[in-house]
Each structure stands twice: as structure tokens, then as C-alpha cells.
Amino acid sequence: MLILTVESSCDETSAAVIEDGRRILSNSVASQIPVHRRYGGVVPEIASRNHIRDIHGVVDRALNEAGVELTDIDGVGVTEGPGLVGSLLVGLETAKGIAYAADLPCVGLNHIEGHLTTVLMDLEDVDVPDFPYVGLVASGGHSDLFLVEDVGEYRRLGETRDDAAGEAFDKVSKMMGLGYPGGVEIDKRAANGDPEAVDFPRPMWTRENFDVSFAGLKTAVYQYLDAEGVPDDEQGIADVCASFQQAVVDVLVFKTVEAAKECGVDRIVVSGGVAANSRLRRDMREAADSEGMRLSVAPPRLCTDNAAMLGPIAHHYLERSSGRFEGHRLQPRCNVRLGAPS
Image 1 (tube, rainbow, N blue to C red):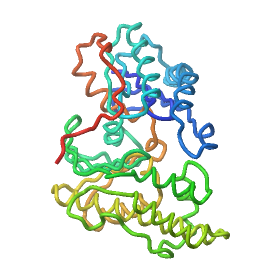
Image 2 (tube, one colour):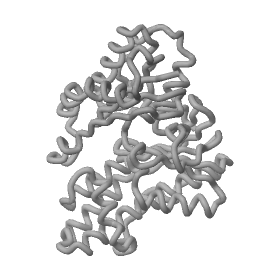
Image 3 (tube, rainbow, N blue to C red):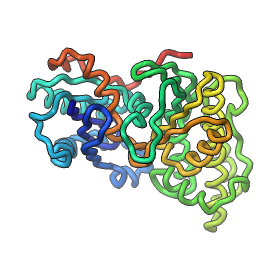
Image 4 (cartoon, rainbow, N blue to C red):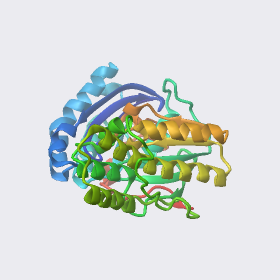
């Protein structure tokens, strides 16, 4: 089965061609980072307009790079939520139009589910996990933990009470004048810093649940910078970045490993844009090894939003579709949640 997938939930416009839900034949991404950098974050209206500009070229590139024609495609999968309503609309209407014109089945997909199942594809140097596994999705808008029992079967174990990890990275970077996207800027500088230089709090680190909270940590950084000032030397900046980053990583690692223990599973998956963070990857690996658990993390290029990550779930739901175009009902589902609560 050859599947065309389309992703436009936030500020990346992407299309991919996936074979049998496992093999990536192409993955075309148009990033809007240069557009939003001047604002220090994503501006929804600007994101929508850029999706409109880029979407057709991205789809054409995906087909060309895969060496296929639209007539070779067996089905279309598109993100219907969660995300920004204007951004979602562009991808949805494009995918529905393509599927209708080509008389193809079209399924709406959950963005978070895509992140959770990215590692099920044939990826170099990635240990494909068996079911069940505990999955952490950490990104700009989400910090959620799930028990994944199979594709389409999820139990939500925990979620952020306020700010997501990626949002905290972006805001702290903005406070320090480091630029956007904040996760990349902080990770780069933290490599030369002392993670114990500043004793930032680890919110909800010891509570008996798997929820997280980063608003208080963000405020703690603001208060520190307000009292001490933003360091005027590279080492000082590196130390603050490393200390903040370590606080976030400690919480995510602790919660994820404890969730796996409670669920009685020995497989962990980490996904989402924050999964590209070098400290998180290192510390999660060390924690998993110490507990005798297997860790699967997608390569950084597939951690941030992209259409290829939708491959496994697109294949799963298309196999269960009627084979006819029934995409009329698909609409943006901006705040849709995944999985029944634990």
C-alpha cells in the first residue's frame, strides 16, 4: 500500500509517501522557522498563510522524490488535530481535494498518535518496540505520557497541568535573548554549561501521579534572571541554560521511567520535538539501561513535525476504511485528546 500523508498542524508544511506504513519513500518539509523567528514564536495567522503558499509544492516534491504518480497512491492520511485551526484547515482541505479527485480513501489522523508510533517504521539504528510500551510525547504544545497497547489502543497516564516542556524552552530562551526555536538554542549552549550551577526546582517531581508542570519552573528562571540579571558572558549563559535544561530533563525522565515500572513494561518510546534534545536522549538512555528497559527514540529529523511520522497510523486506519472517499466529514479538531484517562 502506497500512502500519501499530509501534516500541517502548526508551522511545518509536510507531505510524505509511505509504503505499507513502514518504509519512508519521501518526506518533504517546508519549515517556517525563519518566518516566525522575528516574533520569538509561531504566529497562527502567518502560519496559515505560509501553509497555503507551500502546500502544493510540498506535495509535488513528495511524489517526485518517491518516484510515483498520484495514480499510484492507494490512500491519503492527513492530520485533523490537535493543532492550530487555520493550519489544520490547509492540510485537511488539500488532502480531501486530492483524495476526492483521485477517488481515494482519506482518513483523518491524530498528530499525537503519529508521534507515539513513529518508531514503528523501518528506521536505521532505531529499536522497533514490541507492544505494550510507555510513550512520552514532549513538544512545544504537549508533555503527555501514554501506555501504548497497540496501534489505536492508548491509555493516557499523565499530561502537563500547564505549560509543555517545549513551550518552557521557547520562553526561557526568549527571556535570555537567545532566539527561536528555544530548544535548539538552549541545548547548544547547555553543552558547555554546569547543570548544577543554579538550583532550579523540579516541579511535581515526587507526586504520586504522572502529570507534569513547567509553568513554575519557567517563573523560577524569570525570578532568577530578574534578581541576578542575564549573564553577560558565555559561560554564565551556558550555566543557566544547562541548569534549566537539566531540571526539565530530570522531571521527564523520572516520570517516564516510573510510569513504565507501574505499568509493568520494559519498553519506553520518546517522541516529539523535545525528543531531539541531546540531554534528554542521553539521560533517558542511562535511566532505561539502569532499569533494564529498552528505549526507542526516532532520529531528530523525525522528532519535529513531519508527515512521515503519520505512516503507521495512516496504514492502520486506511486498512479499516471502506476504500472509498469518505472524507467529507473531516474537520479540524483543534483540542482533540488521545487515549482514555488512566
